[in-house]
Image 1 (cartoon, rainbow, N blue to C red):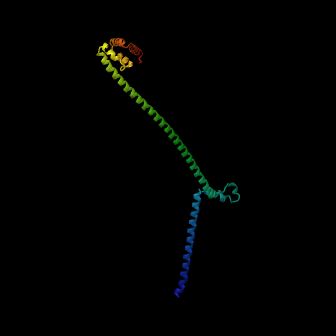
Image 2: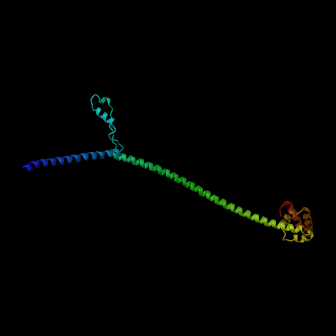
Image 3: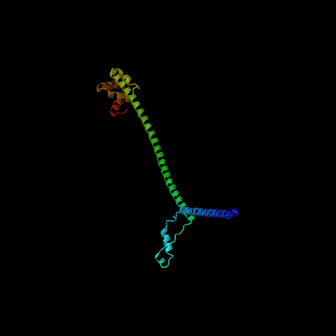
Length: 219
């Protein structure tokens, strides 16, 4: 008898539990869906539950005689497609500006590289010219040193010998007019005069050329 009376009670508690579970599930689903919609608005740039002034204006605008003192303009919801299109266009515009900036930078780098290549080529030409000048200078110095050594030896020989005895050797073709003229400039005028006088008696033409070279500085 007691079991028969407890069965309706247990059944009622079970129904209440199932009903409460269903209501709780619906509440959870409702809040979850609300949060889902809120996130969609937030992604689109909207801020729900912050425009309370518009809400008050909207409600007061429905009251007779009060609505004429209230100005309410409904918000225009922007379609998500156009929103994302605008965002994408803004991103593409930024990328295009960055690409143009990088392209300009690349052109500047290429221009600077070409300038440096030209400068490098010019420096290589200058380096070759300097090397050639240095070579020519070294050759000239070596030639001068050799010439100076020949003049010194010839001057020492003339100074220590008798002009009459060395005149035939000076008239030989081995002793050039220029070498003899440059050497005589190193000696005293008396010694040079004696040498030229002795050379004139043997080879007057060469003596004349030596005198001419001493006066003009050319052979």
